[in-house]
Amino acid sequence: MFQAEARRIERLLYRIARSYLNDDQEAEDAVQDALIKAWEKRKTLRDIHQFKPWMTQILSNRCKDILRKRKRWSFFPLKEETVQVEIPETENAVTEAMKKLKPELRIVMTLHYVDGYSIQEMAEALGIPTGTIKTRMRNARKQLSRTLLIEWEENV
Image (cartoon, rainbow, N blue to C red; front, side):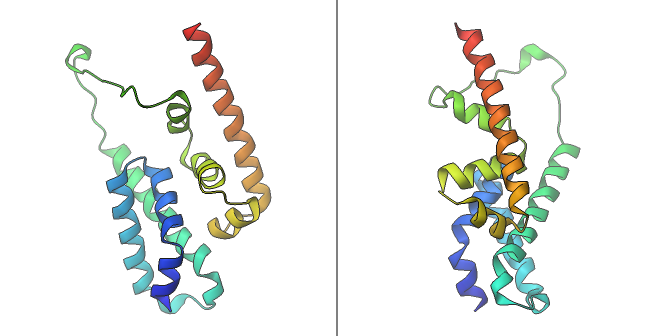
């Protein structure tokens, strides 16, 4: 039963982790870690119909742990001229703007616009109220429009 439910929401789990971490390898690791933890704690799940929100909460917590560790271990170069950052030309403005969103905003935008989830489906999957989903989507849209407008004005 656990395995069937996990496979059913595997794509959702990966999308959530990817939205939090912005890195494919870390997202895969986070999903795997979350599945292991869920397997170890499977007896605490009382209702199998709550598997999706239960699992996404475990995954969200794991992603937040990774982000906290990443923040603690971030390094800054001593000399600015030694760092050469190349932005791939294939990345478009929207993708770059999405990367600037907070993870909780990026998740709802990705699930809605990329995966086609409705507000109700996202609320159930993430285990949060529909009002929170709507607020996050509104905030994400505002931030995206500001970011894209600033970039457009700089390029004109």
